Length: 439
Ligand SMILES: Cc1ncc(COP(=O)(O)O)c(C=O)c1O
Image (tube, rainbow, N blue to C red; front, side, top):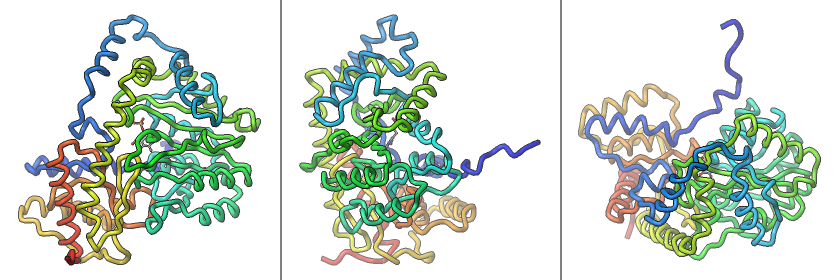
């Protein structure tokens, strides 16, 4: 080509959550059964959308207005409904004008970092949901900047680490919080969120809170929203329906701007995001129309309660199976529907393996290893487990982390399959590390 086509940032775009699917499909082609634990899609895990929700959506499809464009920021009635929902919390107050719809929250995340000056950085958690870390790093043409979540302290953020990184890196303009968190399942206590707001205030930063799991808590946990704690600091909350309804195929998420007027720079940033959406005309309309009808339905609260209780029950089944495995650091989860399970330090090495009888599978695995000679130790384990036990999880090193472990979901609706999957994981860990459970 006459000039180079790709920016430096292009190499930051990786998404192992889907990347590993290609490997699993190669095994499926050889007739292996796969236990899918890679993606947070309840629908893929035998979840059935309730009939009353389907009726609401079917009724919308009968109206001609559903088929047209909508306001570029999103359907006004829906934005009013959501603003009112936020304002009931009595924290930061917003109007319909502070809400901007996107084609899925993933779309919102890509746009969020795109218009920042490349040298202006948003520090995010490690491990981190890779859509954030990849999009932020690709805007900056540089690796992500992160603060640690600590597996030895319930996965709470290491606030000292955050404070020092912010203090000594003047390029940091924002802090990303994912609460409840993907991939760890942690729900941040109030004091931690308050301290993060204080840090943002001290260094004149804005906050971004990915709150797509805000209403997905269990085991007696409660999630505080950014709006509850932000005070007068500028910030953006990211929300969506992919997980909560759940309707991931709808591709529908939104931003809520808090305290836009508190900084001229932040105000221009929000206006730019609005303009970017205007250029595209608007986002997917059908799910926007459905939001007030579904979330405003009297059945919704009980429905959500039951959904969360089921996830809580699964979290306990998983804890029961994996908690006592000595090779692992296991933390209970309280929100979202993932768990990140870490190997004890220095346990993984290149000589470990799992028995695989089928020669074709053995050869496939060796090919994967040859394609990636410097594979991280946790990814090596994950590939072995996929080949030997058919369980497809995601290595935690692909979530922007130096820790070694893997992420599972808490979504399998069929209890027998759930137990079978986690027993297979337990066996894989014990056989691979050679460290047995002592009872
Ligand atoms: C923390 C977080 N944010 C955003 C998304 C993306 O959501 P959407 O399906 O609306 O693009 C996900 C999806 O897994 C997520 O876990």
